Length: 418
Image 1 (cartoon, one colour):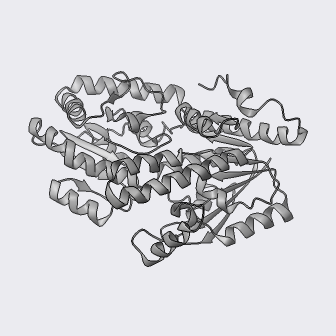
Image 2: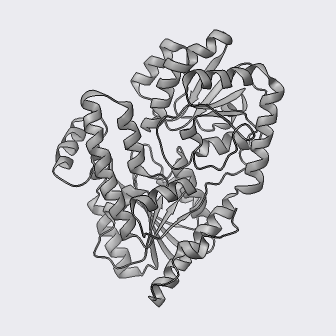
Image 3: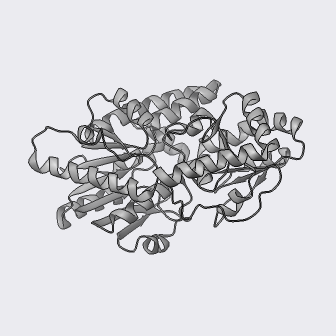
């Protein structure tokens, strides 16, 4: 099988959940198939490191920097997107050089199947190319923006209302265009089927490398809370701002010496200022998140927006940590509340759940051990990639026979994968 994998915004270093998910699947697929990865690189990306991480893949990485929020170029992109059907977050990632290279690779070298990694890749795959297409939906994108809009007010909410509706129209069309849409949870699959009835859609759950994310022996720090995630992703920043304002004071009223560490790339100046005012430690980019997770007494995921599934929770569970999450933070992971993870949504409930675990070592140890057992037995990357591989092969076979019957989702609906 000859695969063309199109990913905007780079893949290495693996500083986000989406990158990790793609890298693990690509690593497994490249051991069995010819895989070409077509991506972009910005100043923080390392294409040479990517080539070392995926030695069996052919890597084509083209320089491109998308306009950043607050820059003059972003203002121009926003204005131009208003004249198009695309939301600005997709409009700004249209790259002519990527589209041209896709055409060349398909015409000159032969490709059996193309994978659009995230919705943002779709505008860069020419519609004129007749090639089986798999859309890899790490999130239901329009739902992220819809949730963000609900958290805003005034002119910001008005703008986000326009954006999420544009996202919804484009996402519906993209799913309908794809031969197969891959979601990362059953929740997302149901949402996508409601958005675009009749599409072929399967759910392939997120995995975790439990050999890498394992308790490291570093002693936990008394009353320390830890959050990890890409801080340039708006839902993560919103989570910490919300936590610092609405939840942390309630925890400190019961546990005065509680400390909080936020680990992740590109924290904004606003987030750093809030963290300094509230006594939260913000690390920025780190080479290895595991020492920070190891030191956590409790791992917190106070997300109010987002989509897909959070690798961060599986990583913390694999390291034996007790996790307190919102419903949004843990959605789609198949976790059982109070057995694998503690779930709380309102600020007082979230603070109470954290406080109980901080004050009860045996309870947080039992919660962490149950979570580690779950991810070790059910969520390996080999299983995830194997399911992805079989789905891709079925898309190719179906396109070759052109019978139009037996969709991929019908074949794998009763899969014994989990």
